[in-house]
Amino acid sequence: MQKYENGKIVTGCVTGIEKYGIFVGLDEFYSGLIHISEISSNYVRNISDYVSLGETIKVRVMDVDEENYHVRLSIRDLDYRVNMKDRSKVVEVGRGFDPLERRLDDWIHDKMKEISKKK
Image 1 (cartoon, one colour):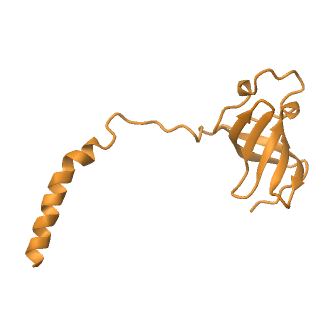
Image 2 (cartoon, rainbow, N blue to C red):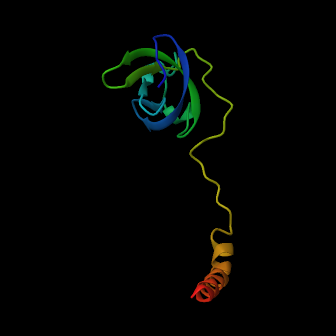
Image 3 (cartoon, rainbow, N blue to C red):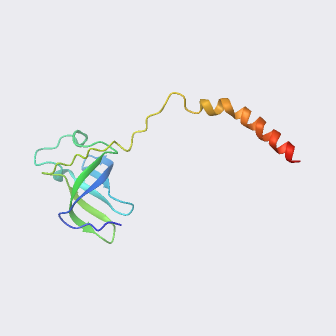
């Protein structure tokens, strides 16, 4: 578990986006909220213009609630982009379970022969 202190810059994963702010998972215990007022010094019309779900970002710790494991965060005046791959997207391949399905009957047949030899 990481110790969070006011002013410290840490990384987290965007776990939710609402009209009022961005939810960020910091570790297995702590999560935080970036209120819409802490996103930019300019007017924020659409939060999704700044971050996307699953994106890893840098955040500044503004306040820590140790009792509830909650952190108030900010990305205002911060270069918050992290050069990491988006953790939420899974790329599917066209084959899926087809190769396993084709081999399943052979594996069952081989195993049945092996079992019958042991008897």
